[in-house]
Image (tube, rainbow, N blue to C red; front, side):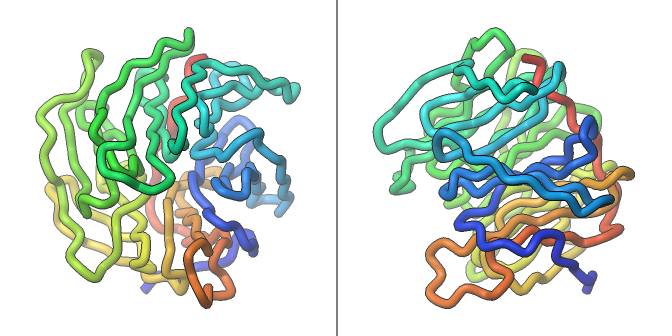
Length: 281
């Protein structure tokens, strides 16, 4: 078992979306339902918190500075000076944003879900810097972890209620040939956020599983990191050398949450992450 540390002790309702920002040397993470965007500098320990205008599913660095935000009513841009504007505004009653990821070509793959988690109520869309949005998957319940293989030829994806991590062939034309990489067994929790390491292995956080698992590219389970917080939500490599695995956690829906539920945890020297491209917009 790899020892975890508490990076930021917090009580986030639904901590999510850890993302390393190399330009600032900080770890970005969110409280979706608390409408909070957090930053954490592991070198100095400095933290910041800002309020977002709506429930926020993801925040990713932009190539020119600032952030792209996956929000309840669409995708917005936050400029370095703090100014906000919509890139793609598409409000749907009863629906909110969830996880998102930046593809090798710099486009944003943004997921949505219904608040009631109804089957088919969510989507996965590809957005480019000019605001063009293309729906890639339209029969989703809870759109979650998305990531790419080191060579950019495979895309991994989680629709949590399926209990699967799926894999697609990926190229500039889109995605095809969806197939299961792994299926999470009954009682082990639901797959949530994921990240891909430099070896091409997939790390996935297990909601109601209190763990992060690492799977090899052929779907073999080769590592389990148990954590005390039952609702582990997402994971990402960070730190100057991308060797520390950061894990977000949630308190929502727990009658007696663990004292660390809602905190940002870290497993030092867990592996080697891949540099993530910024959003080209």
